[in-house]
Length: 616
Image (cartoon, rainbow, N blue to C red; front, side, top):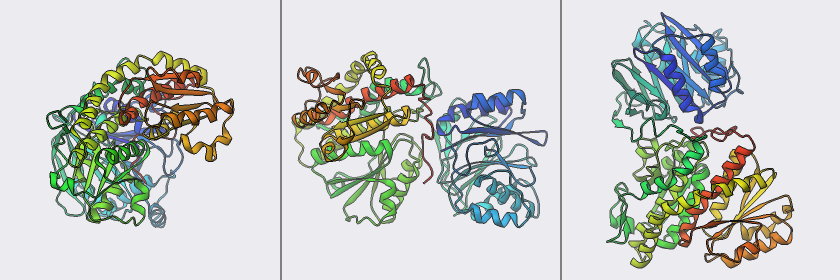
């Protein structure tokens, strides 16, 4: 949620900050701002709206020169999007500027305390309250050197309840940036005679690939030549320098009109990356190097609970079917936020598996921490090396999908499905999964990249379908068995980027109420591959057709029956039943994309959404 970038060095800060903010726009785009320090004066520029039409235009008209500064792109929490509520915010003196991600839960109480001390506020944000609180501690100090500013930040944060990723600069201390985090990601980027602070590595990967991921309660003090990290809880901090796996080109859009389309077309390569080094034909199993559990410990798992949110939750549902079928292990899928807020009973032999693309999802972290607090082992599937989930889990599996910039997840979702398939084989081979069946699954997975390539070649057909159905006000997505979670995901993709109301259901559930909404203006997308649910799904299709509902079917190549029952058909390459979800995801992503483009929507930055939800 929201994006932060800070720079201290010898170069002009404004262009670096603006470019970093453009790379962070998928984290928040209600407004943007920057503060640059020059000749002992803070130059603050901020504007509601997009970066290029708002902030960048303002900076062109009112340049802000200097070699130290902070930038922020906002996703509104406290206060609506406006120039006044945009970051950075200043303290009472106007000499301290801060940018902030997260939510200060006790801001009202803190604000009343500061109002009693004659402070005045210009915005409705919790962030301005924090700026004033830092300033008050700084002014109350015995001296006002750089160490005193760091101490003022620490003192203020000890009074704060909530989450924060924070960056602070002061007109009194040119060349100094202070950063702090609790529950909202923040990293230091190390350069030559320059250093960076950012909420996401995408913002700084063009300048450095050497980074330090800050831990909760870390407070970092940076100049262009050095950095120091302390921890509010222990006064000592564990600092580890990491190397980013991707480069600036990986995070660029290239020749594609949108990041989402680029990421859809990257999926053959994404699947290859998820499989690389993990397929063991000789042992008819999958290999994982980071689970940190012995074969004996894995065999002794009695139950798996998978916690996730959004698209990751849909992947988790597929994972439930996979692991139960292949490994005969009971699996339960939970919304992460519901799991950790109730007292769910967990048997001693239960393992929690969390899934998060960013590795920073607040609700998923809450589930992880609750399970660990209760003494359970936690495994993770995530995409970001060095993320909080990756560091706090007992073991896990990286997706290696590369940076995903589009807010609507595509390639990360497919990577999750591939990894869950491998995990099902891995756990199954330790129990009762036969060599023959395991090799079938592994070979089926290895065929997926080429099969996705063939699906991508149908993009023109999907564009025509989007033109035919793109003005509908409502959609249903229906499937059974392994296809049911993909119906949910297809509906989510359409609604989040095209703003069309869409619902996903089990096809069998339609007759229990939702079928009342079917009419000739409401299209239904049926996932009907030739699997064990095929005949039953055809019967459900007949119910929709009898009520004159238009039908788009995703069916298996060579199915001659389906064209008689559907108005339009997209054909999927033939594969194994557990692997159809991977293939079916691709045309649904393309269909949602084409509809959104047709309707003039901002595909990469859909309204009201942000890529990584780091607030509860």
